[in-house]
Length: 374
Image (cartoon, rainbow, N blue to C red):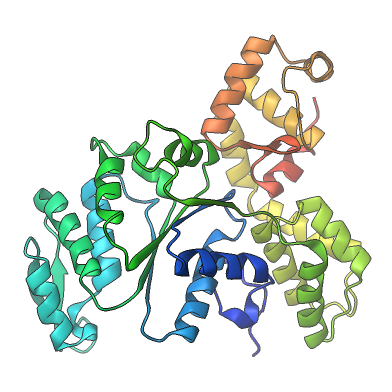
């Protein structure tokens, strides 16, 4: 059975990666020339895929480089961040060689080596146990370990804005103090909350101020995305016209994850030729599967917040949220109440700000909301 080439989750390798040639080369060039990068985009635009693709290309060009990716969204403290960083970089001691094991044990004096049995084979295995009370010491040791290695290292920290929620004081300053003295280690700080990331890297009062190259990731260009989709559909003997693809791309504004989700289902359907009806059927199936989630999301909002959310969905994009005709058209309350509702919807990521105005974050949720009248 052939694999579905339109990956919805994970990175399947260069073969299944759509375009981003310029973005990949620019990212690699920045890192190789000693410029750390802040990568910004809404969730599900393809940041992780781009990072992993760039890392794959780096390793193809130089087998000696070391690339590490970590998503810190689940972390809530410096202790959890440090443990995840350590496990990402070191992993289990079994797989990195005796010499490296000895070096790691010597470098990470605040950790303990734990010997246990492999749950499948029963063979003994070694791992590092990170002790929360020594988190700051361990963090320093990890960066020292990287700095003193004989390899060029690339570290991507995804959802980096999460550290703003840590209870620990001066975590940004602490990380900056270690990062700036690791010339052989290059960093990607990626995030989806644009306002928080912009504050961290663009405000003079923050330790990371102007310490990185800011890169914004946008939707894949329509013609390049069509060429990718057309090639794979043709491989499965499915016809897909440029017009039908263009309609899908416009409807979802080329947002990668949503595009992949629909293309994945179209490939699964295997029609002789993709029609707009086929596209609509796939989108409707996706929305039906998520209906309970969407209803719970709506029920979590106040009437004022909900009315504003539905209004934004109907408009598709609202450049001026306080415009009198917009407020009147959808029966909203005063401008101040609209602003309060908007602040909540932005904070909880129901909506986001884009060049064309405020839009509903989840593209499928937006289409579902458009079916709700006033």
